[in-house]
Length: 122
Image (cartoon, rainbow, N blue to C red; front, side, top):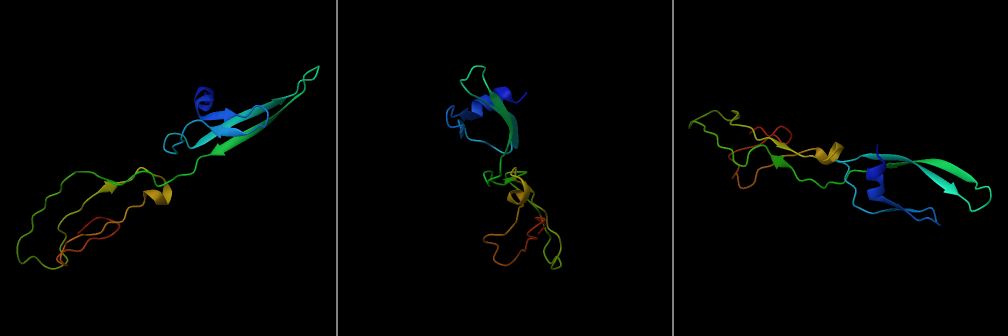
């Protein structure tokens, strides 16, 4: 099943036994490759041996967070109590594990608003 994809990604150094990448790997597409390497000699009869190989792809922070909407608009009445929930923004990041953790902050809010750095509520 993985063989056609594997042939596009890995190139064997036939004499050295080294494996080289032919293309850039992306964890979000394939996180692991499992295959068998066979070594054969030129003797008669031909001798051979095999070894299992697992290549685990590690995540890089290669995806930026994306907001669920390009624009948010909320209304609030004047004289609303301090600490009242005004709204929430939502973003997602398609990396894995800690690279997908999102922290929210405000820019140019003049201290009027505060945002929860993990929930996006302000």
